[in-house]
Length: 485
Image (cartoon, rainbow, N blue to C red; front, side, top):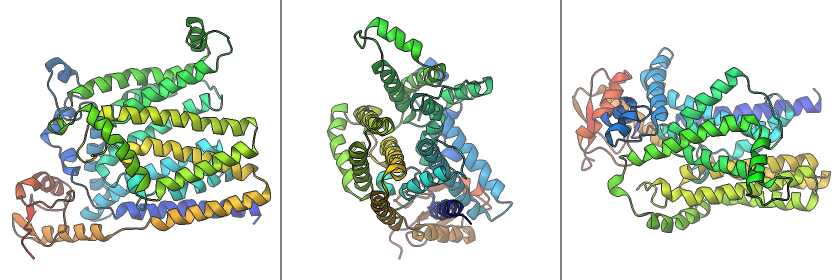
């Protein structure tokens, strides 16, 4: 076997090995406390499902939960109702639920690596050496555990995976055409089918995850500014003639991708004013901005993940600026400027999105995710460029540094099974209990957040979904006696 083919073989094994390992990591994550409300669904969620585009809400002025996130709720409900039942043809009911969660997360995991690798390498051919090298650069930094709490993409909670990771990753996929058009100057005709798909996602995405409307509007504004500042005229940047000539120079695919998505995003933000979530726990906007610096500090200081990513980005920037004063090197360095502008605007707008008591400092891994993705892109793009262009001796030293970085990230990202086994033990106890209302032993929770259920009424929705999945034969309420040993 030749050296190039041997390299491709080892890189492919690394890729498949990561997907296998990550799948087990996702499988062993316990179920979260919001699944049943979204899947049964609760009366609050049903209100939204009955009014997908908020027309009834607008006509009555009523408020309900997440009025601008219909598609996230709909896809979550449909997936978690149908996929576990389908998988029961292959396995037992309990395992089918954990498998369903793991399958969704590993699909997102794969899509993240695929998109990054395609953007970095310039090819979508998974068997291509450049694609696999790009994937190898990204794989260690996509954390399922480890530094996940500060730079995670897929949420541990399957519920919030549908609201954060899935919409954001689909937006990345949606914007790949924009990247090819703007960054690579590859303007391709969009046929009827592709145009219809673009319009479909332009409606679906802004009415899914909470981050999407703001991301669409920020990216659209920066795209317009990019074309505006690259004008060839001597007029004022914002003069009418320059604006008009800029509009004429923007390729049609850019308009098709951004204009409909912007319109729906503005509508989504307007619908968000009717959200019933956490109204009683909100705090003034000024207080939210005061909390943001602390959120930024915690994000970069509580684990090695983000600081290491920033350090390697700084090293890459220094090497490219010092060693490569060519067009491609300057283009990569220039992209960091746009990432910086994007990050500042995004952070400044974040407090306007509301306050959540479970995110006391506004910024957390889920709201930090767009910045994480932007930083990972620059790291991957710049590292790939350096591996291709550095002289042999310097490239060897650089590669050793990357391998040390990979070792640190991979060493942190363990498989964690304790909470999973605890929850399954409680589920087995519930299944075998003859009581209609079961007292669970110990401190093992079933489909809840950190706090155990001390009132059996709180388990009602969970009992319904467990019966629906066939885990229990009848509806069984349960609770835990904290005084019990």
